[in-house]
Image (cartoon, rainbow, N blue to C red; front, side, top):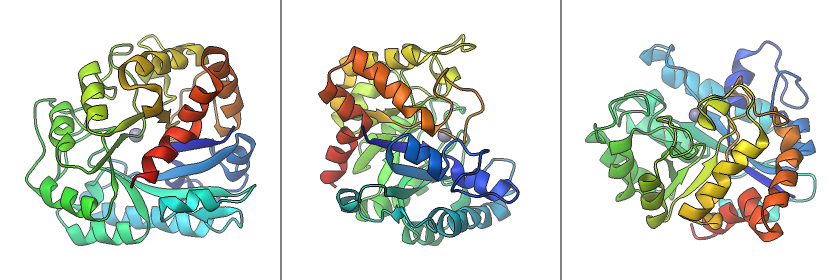
Length: 308
Ligand SMILES: [Zn+2]
């Protein structure tokens, strides 16, 4: 079964690791070979700017990761750059679609031109924040009551004009509710249920219902601390509990996958890199119908972008 995965941090690793190689670097959880073995058909690659990077160097860092995307990921002959969602349908057997996303607007400061540069490079999903405050909003680890900042309006207007998906995975709670009414396309690309695991990176039932009411969807993340509070031996079964729970709240057609491979250092048992995707699919097939598993694995997202 094909997989569409909405979040990985391969680009951050490709820029940091010495002599990194996207094709078969063992240090990558989502290398090309592993994605292929895991049947991943479309992988979203995030530009992630670590908070320790000083503000004046953040945009440069974003460009370094764009460069890694072009020079290392897209250089693989069977990797196809998805700049229009319709291209997913044209992928041939053996090809993998690669999508660029931006995990937080920290790199642009208050300069919309910088965002334009990144959109022109192919960014299709934009998170307003990572975990902390920036010029646009407050992140998931900040005061949940602080809403979007005035600059958010201009940013979201530009994203709407370009039909870019706004990723709410790392937003704080008030920012999340503020963005619902104004963003055209919404997704939480790598978050789980807060009712099952009380972490501010996860979404409450109220947030989930509101997200879906505004046409959005949620892609579950494989990071154990977002799956269970006591996360020492997290099983695939525990991750599936989130999916079953979410099914009752948002509907199976609005759930997808966002592994966070290469952005995580703790793992679900038997789900430690992209090669392990069949282990998840097999267990999903034990719990859900074939049609439901297909919706989660790729089809629900495809249906979503078909309307963009
Ligand atoms: Zn993240």
